[in-house]
Image 1 (cartoon, rainbow, N blue to C red):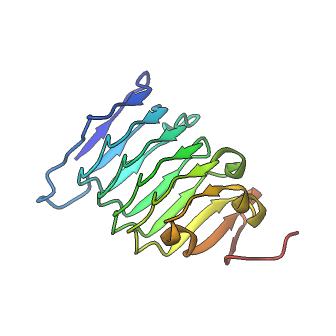
Image 2 (image 1 turned 30 degrees about the vertical axis):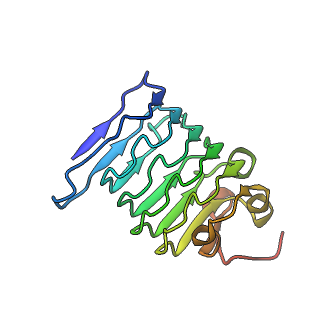
Amino acid sequence: TSVRFFNGISTVSTGFMCYFDTSSKGTREIDFGSVETIENSACLLGGITSVKFDDGSYPNLKTIENYAFESNRITSLVLPHSVQSIGTGAFQNNTLLKKVTLGTYDTMGDNATTIGTNAFTGCTEITDVYFCGTPSDWNKLNIKSGNECLTGATRHYILGSGITVTGNTYPEV
């Protein structure tokens, strides 16, 4: 089952409340295409297993507001380099979330300025975070408290030309 937002839709509003039948098995995916803002609680408790934020051209998503995806069933998350703000509790209690990618081969560190309080709290299965940049870029992020599930995972730094360095620290070159 899937839902796709076509070009021209810039905001998914509070109260959209995308619900899927959580008793059925299988993928429940939302493709946000060219959406720029996902408002507070827009997809809260929706049974969502997969989200896509890039329409295949230039990613437009800038803001994921508070509790936008709280308590879903997302297993892997790829946030485009265009994201500037992830709100309080935005992905909290996605207990199946294992892998988070911040940015897509671009300078995410200059764009994703804030990850809100408890944005990833309760996501206790996160084992890996893929970050497009260096540890210096990572340190530029404004990661608020309550995101230990994200900050405590093994980081993989994706550098230019697709080179990946694994480990939470490595010598600057």
